[in-house]
Image 1 (cartoon, one colour):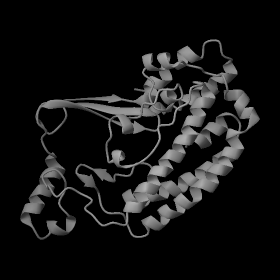
Image 2 (cartoon, helix red, strand yellow; image 1 turned 90 degrees about the vertical axis):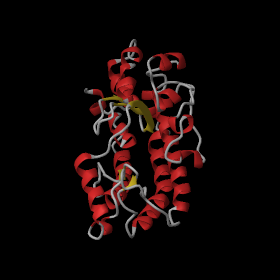
Image 3 (cartoon, one colour; image 1 turned 120 degrees about the vertical axis):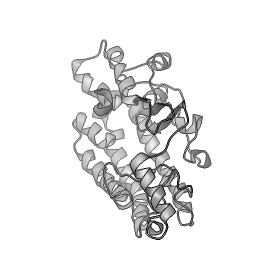
Image 4 (cartoon, rainbow, N blue to C red; image 1 turned 120 degrees about the horizontal axis):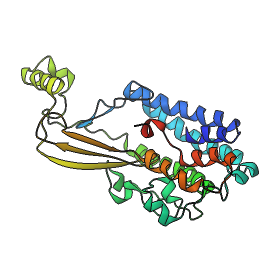
Length: 280
């Protein structure tokens, strides 16, 4: 999404079709596993909604096989393009110290030379079991942010290949504790206890002990975190979201000073904001 639309921002239309062809195949995987292309309700409390459907791994293998030649084409189109380089190099520079002070995370921070990645700093979902590099640059301009994201796509596919090797191994996809995750559907018609647990979870959910917790993940744009406070009820008492796009976009007022108006679209594109996170 970022690479295809980012090229359009600078007038490079061809890359959009190269990227969105691959993106469609990835969304097909979302749809096959979770039933929706944009918002698949696949990850649940206690595990996953279901096991991967028949034929999923063959589609995944097709995406893995397609990725490298497609990215070679895109890099030839965009990365070495002299017009795009002229538009991005030395534009929107922010130092490492300023990046930290403004609360930047994700590629915007790593392009300033700071190797902070939530997956490495605070591992979750098994990321500690996989080998990948935290990509950094030191130029801190729009082109550095572009290169960091390109290289991070390669690192993401590196993780996917490691995950693919273990997907053939059978194993549970959901916690057996039915007080927190729904019991298997095939047992609901046979067990009154399973039916009761299912009804309680759907109608009331479950109660969390009083306290607070902050949990973050490494999203495409940086640290996406949630601070949740419980008073012991079945609903959170307070919820606070830390959206990376809102923090990253605020630095625009700093990096835009002294630049050309024509470069504004370059700087916004290099920050890669999702305005659903920003318009609060």
